[in-house]
Image (cartoon, rainbow, N blue to C red; front, side):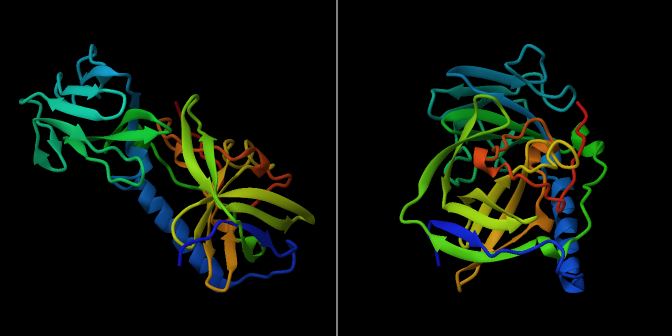
Length: 296
């Protein structure tokens, strides 16, 4: 069943009635363990080590400091090749001696698939480094991953509030007649992402009613990006992410114990969307992930 575009009205709840639920706490702890393992994996956000936005024309890449996109010294050939960009697509031409593969196979020259519109981007690899073409609101760039990046090597751990049953909220899903197309600003100035909004959520928290806009995610899933009065203090300044599940009976669940830091908390090369203006909650949401101090 596909998600219809909607307003989500949350049933009023307090923050003092619910007691500990061992099954719920176990479920949340397992979720948090999985989140940390994913972050630390070979394809986790800790490996994202560079981002170069393309302009029409040729961009050379390699470890040579004179390259248009400089790769880490000692981890790539001095001259890796050239990204040729015409404003709509990227063509890669590699140096024969650079040891570069595309999707695990030898490659000479050809167009690269980007990650836009839910596509699977072509993977360019050399040693511990990999690159893909990303597309954000019509802008194209090269994202670099490094399995031995400083962000991965220096990572400590994620930190969370204790699990609190009262932040596990259930509500009702009320459909909109049509979707809203949104251009959502990101943490990188001038870079905008395009999303669909299925509607809003309305819920009671700390004795007050709050409204927030949600974005469309997968089937039967909604995405909330929010800030609150803990942001910039106990929690990440730019806000946090949270996904909600839509049941067949029309109810929807958001567990703020699973609210987590966006990727930009762990690498400066992520293009994280920012919360819509109305998603600055007038209450401290003391649940979910605490801030992480990314060293420059």
